[in-house]
Image (cartoon, rainbow, N blue to C red; front, side, top):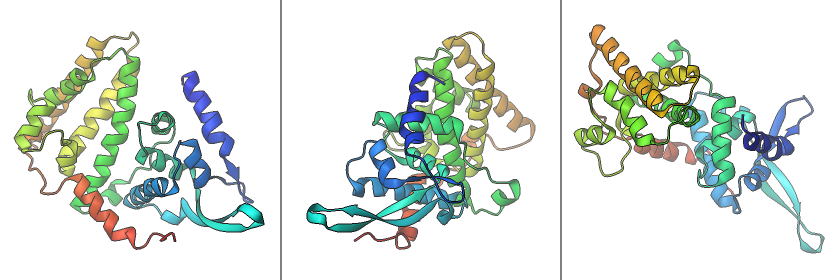
Length: 281
């Protein structure tokens, strides 16, 4: 871990950590808001709402990680006011930094730190099979987001500077020579629309495998080399494609593009639970 990340962990997260009467660690949302350089509660509350949605989609009990609490603050002339706050678990903090503004330096560092140190809970095969297609897509898409954060960090450490070339190498191997732009055009997507947001669960699953296996191999790469790392990404994608073919599966480019994007599903999910989230006055 770099000195910068070590300092971030110690000063930004650990210094505002609390311990309850049962010995459980927790963070307060209002303090985390300041640590992540947010100045307005309304803006940070939107991030918390998105994190709560992610928690629900993980089939995790929301109240175990996001507990509403009142907080008394002192006003001028001796007056007091009770404001809304949240008691957050470490997992809740992880979800919040994942949904926060990555332009902020502390947020970007937090995303990297928690992606590596606090992996999200994985569903068992039985639990996954009980999900409907939309739920499977949301779950797999989250895995690709988390996986890419780790993959790109490792790739950078292994000498990668041209991330467009590195990314396209993996897609070319998996999609028989197609780049990200080729895939987007074939799917009929708008300019800059994310191709991963427009994949079904099976196609996302193949990409999760591409990401995680490349990550594992790059970890073993001893000498930093952009060429070697990029070639590894291509070979992993191609190997996965060959495996799909041997098993008689459908090639990724032949899988149907869902009618709704992941962002549409997430917005729908947000609308469904928004009325259940505390309405701050």
